[in-house]
Structure formats: structure tokens, C-alpha cells
Length: 571
Image 1 (cartoon, rainbow, N blue to C red):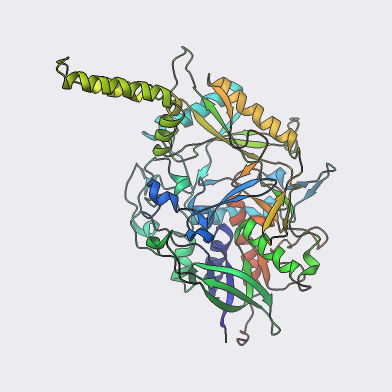
Image 2: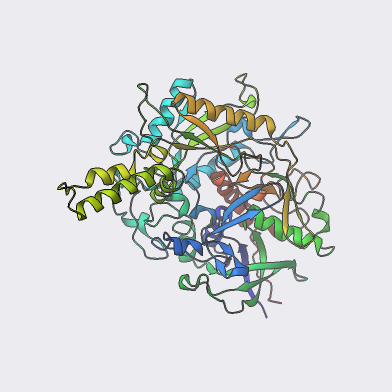
């Protein structure tokens, strides 16, 4: 007899974690199945050796944090770990613009989403409260001296564009006191790991996992509270398939792995096949994971055949585009200090309006955000891209050592020569990555290929007008900062890379328009829900994390309202 729960949730990202807490709070017996392992603060890898194994490649015995997908039409980077994408995202909590709640089709028709901004606003409020959303305290020192934030602000002013400081899921205050590296106290510090947390260290490591607990990641917030309320959380649990039960509800089959941190990259014991049943099943494995599971189920027989016409459609990368400003300069021509290693990864944004805003601006809107990177990435750039200068400096240093050893000089102070070896550090110190996201075309198609793997096809020339506008804006920012515009070398030849994959199980007003309804329930399958980025019928525009979480909170209301009064027997 399989173990039975009121609700089984597949995945622990922004949809799954919110669902877990809300449903456990409502008194339901909840089980969360997460394929990756837990990452308490202090456990995120930093060394080259540890980073080598920090990827999700099960065939090589690697069960790390980063899952890098390569498809025919696009590439994608997602997370595998307890807390899902919150472990590696850039913390931005922006609401979907009110007038952008439409699905723009290829024929130019704008169709309203099944949910509106007014419906989601109470849920946005609830998520922001739980994650203790805070704006970067630009009016306080040392935050006011963040060079990359000031650079984007100056560019926005020079271009006459709207500059905003969004809310972030990051702690910058100890109570009402702003400060760097201050210990968090009271309820804000409590978490399932019992690990101390502190305010932001401004180290730029948000996207590789925060080792200080400064990020309000889902494992430290929603999942910790869900566990305290009795939710069962299983890591190393990768779902393979599921099916409806004759008695009602669903049976979920998964394999259980023992993913101890010290075992990464080592031969693993054979995973254990396990089965659980539930009255309600929530797929929250992310856009790629949930779409893959449903596509595989729909192709395996007739049970889910009714979903085939809409399943896998309207894939979008949320307009993701990475570009660079290189060699920013002041008005006097000197290198401008940008120092993108200082601060959280994102601190501010420029908003480009949409034709839907009614401002008369043509085209689709987007956001351009300053981007940071860890200090070790700056060292890597300086000693690879700027290598010739560094080699010359190193040779001069060796000559100075030799002259000193041979008695050819009495100057024992080598500090100046060491400094010259490091050079002016202009590449890392005066450059700024720019992250753009917005309303691109949702015309990608996800399917299972002949080898049984997920594939995504994006039409050639997709989002051409949008991408042209986004690149042009980045070039204007580079010009305003006296720098040089550079494409992302990995996508310069037109191959898109997204960290915000959306769509595949889109919401619709009826089964002919989507896979799930406005409450997240799969058409024709009572008790089967999808709660992640795959339910988006089009791009969110701004960073989608907050909207995914708000939709999950909205979906949870429906499950709670229709909560069954009795529990079926196992079987």
C-alpha cells in the first residue's frame, strides 16, 4: 500500500513552496518531492573543484545546483535544489505591469490573461510580506556608494528614461537598522537548518547561492514554515510519472536518491523506486520539468490525450537578453569605476514602456537591469580576457625578483611592480553587464523528441523587433556611460539563452486555449494542478518570480476552498 497524502507537490520552486506552506497552513497533509538536495547557507560551492560537480548531470553522477539545458531552438539555465530557482535568481520582486496582462498572438490580437492584475495584487502583497521584500537602501551609506547602481541611474537620467529601484528578497536591515553583514534576529532568522543569517554582504554572489542567508530564499521562508506545520519534504526525489487513480486522486512514481554533499561526483547507489498517492497533485517542477512530465504522459497513452493540442505551446524565454557595457568612462575620459562585484546582483532597472501603456511608444516593453557578478568572476576575466597585459606585468615582476636575488638592485619594495602586474583592472572595474527581459513573442514549441528527451523549437527570426529594440537600448546605455557595447558572446549569433523559461502548460479561458484554467487546475483532470512558470500564456515582462509565486498563492485559495472533508483509502 502506497503512502497517502492530501497533496503531493512535485518541485520546490516559487510555485511548489508557496503551495506547500499555504496548504499545510490549511491543515492538509502535504508531501513535497524535490529532485535536488538541500543547500543551507554556507554550503554553496565556491572552489573550482567543487564547482566542477555543481551541475545536474545524473549520467555522470553529478546532482548539483545548475541544470544547463541545450535545445535546438534555445538554451536554458535552471536550478536543482530545495528552494528551486530562488537559490540562484537575482532576488527581484517586480509585479507584472497592469496593462501587460494580455497575450499578444502572431496576428497582433491582444487577448486578456485569465487572471488580472487586480486579482493578483492581494497575492503579490502576501508574497512580499513573507519574503520580507526590501528596496536597496540607496539613501544610506555604504549602499549609496554602489557604483553600478549609480551608473545605471546616471544613464537613465542622460537618456530621459524611467529608473526604478525594485523590491528585492534580500535583507539589508537588522530591524530598522541598515547595515552590511549584521546578524538577523528573531523570526526573520529562523529556518529549518538552524543556520545563522545576516544582512547582505554586497558580495555579488546571489546567482551562485548566498552563503550568508541574506537572501530570503524559499527554503529559509516558505518551506521552513511549511515543515514546521507538518509538511513532509523529501530531497533527492525525482518524479518519473503519475496517473489518475480509480478511487480518485493520483499516484505518483519517483526514484529516491541519497544526495549527501560529500557524495557529489561519486558513484551513487541505485535509486529506490517509490510510490505515493494523493487526493491532489501539484506539478511545480518548473517550466521545463512540468512540461516534460505532462508531455511524456500525454505521449504514453490515451489518458492525457485531450491535452495534446495545447500542451507544449507558447514557450517564451521572457525576452531574456544579456549584453555588456565595456570600458565605461567619465566625461574627462578617465575610466569610470563601475565595480559590478559590489552589491547584490541586481539593484536597479530602467523601464522601457510598451505600446499597451498608452504612451504612444511603439513595440513591446521591457526592463534593463544592472547586473553584478562575484569577485572570482572578475579575477577570471582579468586573467583570461586581459591576459597579455597581465603576462607582461608578471614578467616584469620576475625580472625584479631576479635583479634583487643577483644583487643588481637594492630596491626591496616590490609593491609597485606587483600593482603593475594587476594592471588598471579596467575590464572588470569599468564594465557593466545588462540584463534585459520583457514581452517577447511566445511562439516556441516544446515536444518530446525521438530519443524521449525534451526539445524546444523557436521559429527563426522570433522576437526580431523586440530583440532589436532591446539591443538598441543597451547600446544607448553604453553610449551614455562612455563605454562600448558588446553582445553576449554565447548568443551573439542569434542563439537565445534564457534563465526565465515560461509556457508549455499555459492558462486559458477554456481547453481550446490552454492546459490549465485560471485556478491552475488542468482541464478535464480534477485535482491535478500546475503551479510554476509553465502556466504563463505569454511572457511576464519583468522578472517572473513574484508573479509565479502570486499565481500559486491564488491557486492555493481554490484548493483550500474545495478541500475535501474525508480522505480516500490508500490503494
